[in-house]
Each structure stands twice: as structure tokens, then as C-alpha cells.
Length: 390
Image 1 (spheres, rainbow, N blue to C red):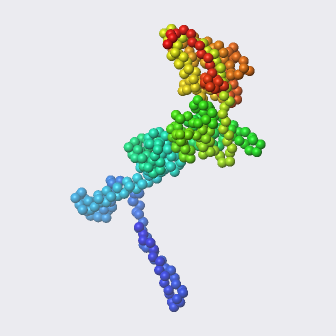
Image 2 (tube, rainbow, N blue to C red; image 1 turned 45 degrees about the vertical axis):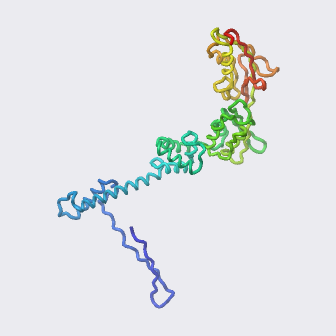
Image 3 (tube, one colour; image 1 turned 90 degrees about the vertical axis):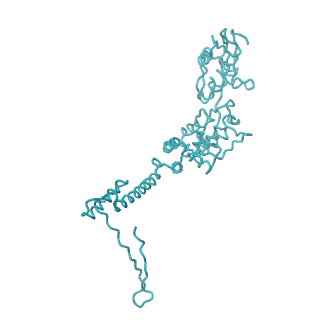
């Protein structure tokens, strides 16, 4: 490499103020010859290039052996150049996500494009969810060294996140982003003019029995909500085991983190329509009535797989009597099902058994929690015939 030029201040003549700065430039580097191959990168290439140069400088010498000192020095230099070339390739490869090999480099490049590899790993239970800061980063990098396939999955998933819309801009964005939350099974969003500005209104069907935005979050969803918040980068919400926040508080925190600035968002419950049914069931002789009563309660319940499970019915989706009968006839031990009454809760609503369906509209959602303390959320009367008692 060329040396830095030296600057000197010289005074010519008798004037003490007439100095001249003089720079003595170093000699320029020699121009590479036309025969220099810039693509030489490995040991064999470096050795061949230097051996050809040596033979060209000493044309009188016709024989070169591995024992010659010149050949030994050339092979040592070729080895060093091969190591330096490999080092340069590795350093250059670490600058790109596609070719980076070190876990710390991959994590930093993923973080540069907005992909939180630590939060994703915690949501997948690859590392402990309670870890944070530099400790979580070190544990993740050690995990990737032991499980390189996990690092490859993150390497592929990171660039795809760039094309994923995470902000809530349009009404569709609000609905789609909220459906990803573990508390929400269905969401409907629309824009409404309030007289001064447009307001985004959201109607949400949530998981759990309460079906109320102002009730506390279900305890069984606490860990799932914590993992989701870490994955999306929400750290301000505290999930205290003694006093869980309401569903509205959890969802407001999520919305505020991704909504447009200055955009008013209003959350509201759907219009839950309680359903009343009177059902007669004929039980097969080799089944107990008690076990069929329990199986029927599960089939028509609001738990996982139940007929009235939250999210099974969409907004304004009609409820058909044939679907209720089909859900019960699927149970082993039931011979016949007779639906005697099928209507909305309230004396002003007629029986819809002959019509075969209960018509719903707008933001109405059919529910039947069969809770004696809250009859407005629907209930049914079940009468069993036949079977064995016990």
C-alpha cells in the first residue's frame, strides 16, 4: 500500500510570511500486467500463478521440484493466500442474510428488517418465554448453533415479513389483524362518519364463555396472550395473575400499537341473540340417559367443538333447525331427535319451527349458553326417552 504523502512548509527567499506548502507524493504502484488473473481464489490457482511467474523470470531453468526452496516458499505463500481469500469470502458473505453463517449475524440482519427472532422463538417455545434483553439473545444464538434448521426457518421467514402489512390502515386491515389475536375468533370493521371525522367501528366475537369485552380475560388464554404480545412487540401490558385485564383493555393495547395516528377506533360487542329450544331425544336401549345428557350438553355447548362455539356463526348468519338436529344425530346412542320449539328469547318472537330457521341480520349472532343465571343468552329444555337409567 502507498504511504501517506508528507506535507512540508518551505520559505523561499527572504520574506518570512511567504511560505509554500509542498507535498512529496510517493511513487505510484506498478501497473498489473495483462496476464494477471483477478479470479484466482484458491490454493491451486495461487500456486500455479506464482510458478508460472517464476518460470518466466528464470527461463534458463528447466526443472522445478517440490524440494526446491523456491517451490516451498511459493507453496507456503499459496497456503496463506488461500486462507486470506477464504476469510475475505466469509466476511463478505456475512453482509447478506442469504449467505450469512454466524447466528449473531443472522439475528442482527433479521432485526434490521424488522423481524424479532427472539419473540418468534419464544412464541414457538424454542427458548424460555421469561427471558429478555441480552440474555434472551444469547440463549437464542446458542439454540441456533445446536439447531441450525431453526435458524434457516427464521432466515426464510424474515424477508416474507417485509411484505406483510402489520399496520391498521384500511377497515380490512383492522379486521384481519384482530382475527390474528388469540382472544378474537371473528371481527367486522366499518367506517362511520361521526359529524367531524371518520370513526372506525369494530365488532368482535371473542373466545370464552363471557362474550363481553368488559369482562376479564379467560385465565386459560393468559400464556397465549403473553406469547402473542412478545411476538408483535407489545411490552406495556401487564398480565397480573391476581387481576387480569379486561378483554377490551388487551385489545385496545394491541390496536393502539398498530393503528394510524389520530384515527378513532371504537370497540363494541355483537348483538347476541339468545335462542330457546325444546328438544326431545330418543335414546337407544344400550345407552344410559345420564351419559347421553352429558354428550348432548357438549354437542350443543359453547366449548371447543360445540354447536354454539364462539366464531362458528358469523355476523347475521341464519340458524337452521336441521343443523341442530344433525349435530345431535351424530352422537352415538341417539335414535331420534324431535325439535318441539325453536325461537328467539322473548314473548314477542314467534316459534320458527315450521319455517325451519331463525333469521338474523346485521351484527346479530346466535348464542345458547344454557346458563340458568343468564337466560337472555339462550337456553334449551331437553327431554330424554328410552335408554337405561343411571
